[in-house]
Length: 425
Ligand code: UD1
Image 1 (cartoon, protein in one colour):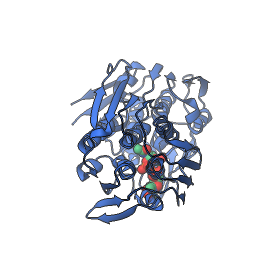
Image 2 (cartoon, protein in one colour; image 1 turned 90 degrees about the vertical axis):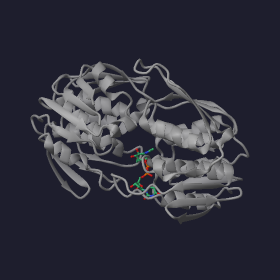
Image 3 (cartoon, protein in one colour; image 1 turned 90 degrees about the horizontal axis):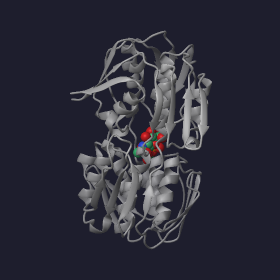
Image 4 (tube, helix red, strand yellow; image 1 turned 180 degrees about the vertical axis):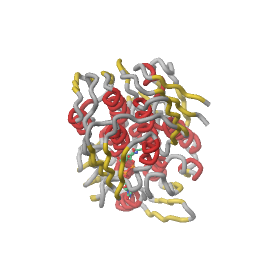
């Protein structure tokens, strides 16, 4: 099994090019199923979850052409999905269990073909993560849904537009119902919708396919259903979580890093906390520069919230920063239960963290010491690599397949900023 070895102690300096967003490309790839012509998606990151989604769509019968670009040189890759050959409407357990986002084919398959069977995602390392909001939203559009033998089975002759209020804010449920509504008959109004920038990007892609969606990125989305969606070309929005991760790496190491080809407007809550930690943050068009001037960060308090609040996907990285910061930082996780699995690993590096329920109190220590640690989920793995960048000696992060699900060439990108980091095994 591959591992990442980091030797700590080097302030990061330089520029890093930000990739397309994992959380945008996955729903957008699923949305291609709604079209009746090929759809070309560019700025696609090289990620394991993208490969899994391509397998899922290929398994349904879609034609997939991948243009790899120039790997490692900042070259982009593009994927063309030709949905005309789709012949199966079943998302099997083998794929859904490795990637929960597979559930996002439910809405598109149902809207386009009138039936869909998607395996229930089951347990997940960061909490139970049910899909009841996806199901209720699709039922509101007239779908008949049953859960049988571990599968969600959905049927509808033609979905009908409806007024639906989500009981809670869910990114995935908003996306699934939005995609289905694009081909429904009549108008759909979705209230209490998630406002994540990736939802606005999905809507932009759907509109390029001929959909009529307004309000995506706000809590109220209005969709005028259309009878068909055509092909289009769409470039995926920049990854705000990857951006934030590199900026935290710069802050922790006392360095100066510019993230380029990013979207500063999607990172306001994160940038505010980095400033509070003592960093000078400068924004210029699609670039963000963080300069820590060689100083140690100050501890910050964090409460995770749906967008535009502080993202849960940055919680673990900020916890790593608090571990070596000056002072005490309190971290409240309100989105997922059980999303503190990185705590025990950070403790192995010498951190001082106390967890009570959904709250972690992190007392900054002068230094961490390298040790073997184990990645437990995607963002937790990132926090361990970050901690390794400042720990004395060698940190070996095991089970990095979690990292490869969501970070494109992380060791090459960090290496380009001066970090001593390598992949082994
Ligand atoms: C997406 C992101 C993930 C991010 C999360 C929150 C993708 C591919 N993944 O995940 O990186 O951490 O948003 O920003 O975009 N819930 C229910 N019932 C449902 C759906 C969700 O109870 O039907 C709960 C979940 O268990 C969780 C919370 O709602 O506690 C938020 O989940 P949701 O916003 O749906 O996250 P995902 O779409 O799974």
